[in-house]
Image (cartoon, rainbow, N blue to C red; front, side):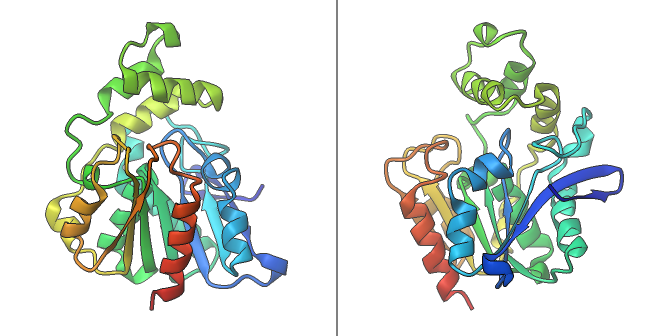
Length: 255
C-alpha cells in the first residue's frame, strides 16, 4: 500500500485507474471512524468509478486506517485534515480534481471547495447536509466519550453506541478517533458555505439523522444539486445504487 509523509504524519492512499490508463482524477475522502477500504473499496465505489473511466485516489485520513495515529485533538482540525488531502494531490502531481467526501470527509471537501476552489473541478458532499453548519442534536462529545468507555456495555447514548460498535468492528484505534472527534467538529459558517461556487452535489439519505437536511444545505450553496437517497440512513446510504448512479450522472454533466 503506497503512502507519503505530510510533515511527520504518514498518509496511506490508493491510486487506481482502469487498464493503467487513468482518466480524470477523483479524490475520495472517507468519513469518521471509517477508512478508504470501508468507505470506498468494499462498497464498490472504486470499481464503479474506475470502470467509468476515472482515476480514483483515496486516502486514509490521519488517525484512521493505515495512516498515523495522533492523540492530540489540536492535530485534527478540518483545515489540517484538508491540508493532508491537498498534500496528497501535490504528491501525485494533481492540480485539479473532482472530490467526493462522506460525512466528515464531506466537511473536508466543503472546506477545500470554500477555501481552495482552484483545486476542484467539482465537490460531492455525501452524508452531510445542514449539519455542515448546524450540528444541534447531532453526535459530538457523546461519541468521543463512548469511544473512550471501558466497554460497549458502558455506553448508553444511542449515537455513541453506534459509533463505538462501528469502531470495535473495524478494530480502530479508539483513542485516536476520540481525539479526532473532539478536534474536527469545527462547523462551517453560513457565509463560508454560501461562498462555494464549484459545481456541487449534496447526497444524503432520507432517513439520515446524522447529516441533517440535504435540501436545506442546498438552499445555502447556490447552484448546487441535491440527491435524496430514498430510505437510507447515515450508514446504509454509502453504497446505495441511487447514490452511485446520481454521482456518475453529475460527473458526466459537470463542466
